[in-house]
Image 1 (cartoon, rainbow, N blue to C red):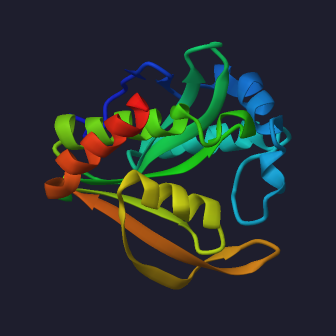
Image 2 (spheres, rainbow, N blue to C red):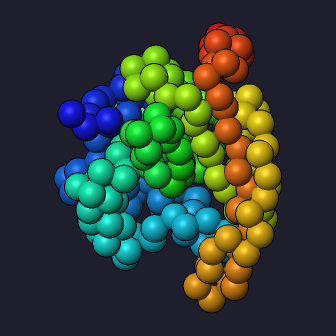
Length: 195
């Protein structure tokens, strides 16, 4: 049995659906909302590179190391971004939530909070994970703040962790939530959504 099986997760604000090639045009539109690919410290695909990025994520799913989702707004039905379970480690019951981006129009809205709540609930309560990680570029202050607001704790910084084409080395900040923290984090996220 696969550790991460195909699943759709639905909430009040958002629905997470398994990524497919049929999502291409809608993802291009979502990326145009804020021209997110122009942010040098992220790796959001441009409309021109979207097809290759979808193929890459689907190949990682076929290999069993990723499970990619699209994020759909429930109010309009529009696709507004992508997220993933990645670095799947079934033997140690660990996953990372990452490779996430949202259209500018839904950033700092209930969509991201609810998407993370659904992924975390699935990871801890269905997959019985012992830890869920988040990683981001040290220079991506917006992402670091958003991860901390979820209730994740910073584990450390991996210096010169990877190469960013045309930029140089990337320092990666690692955050995590462990299973003993999950009930408190869950209540915190539910409270945020209720407000």
